[in-house]
Length: 104
Image (cartoon, rainbow, N blue to C red; front, side, top):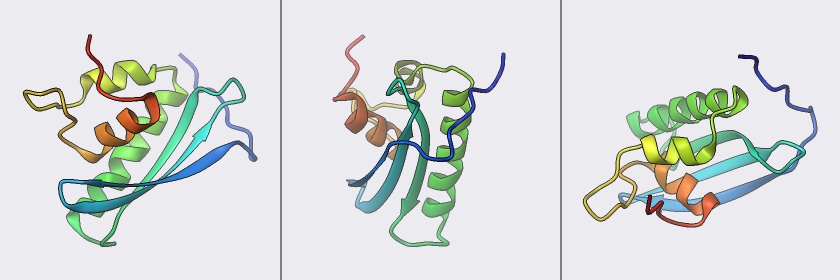
C-alpha cells in the first residue's frame, strides 16, 4: 500500500462548526479527482485537551485518506450515539463534508 502524493497547491476549504458546545475550525483539502485528501482540525481553545485531540484525529484521518481509506469507511468506524449522530468532532466534520448521517 502506498501513500498518494499531494500537490503543493490543491483545492481546499475552511469549515467552522460546533460540536458538544465547542467551536471547531477545519481546513479540508482534496485530490485532483475531488476525493478528500487531508484534514486540519482545531478547537476554539488552543492548547487544551480538546484541541490536541482534534489535531491528532485530523493527522490520523489525513494519513488514512492518503493511503486510500474511503471517507465512508472512516465515518462508519467513528463512534455514534443511539440516534446515529457523531460522538466526536471528526465524525461531525466528515458528516458535514459527506452530507449527513450514514444510514448503512
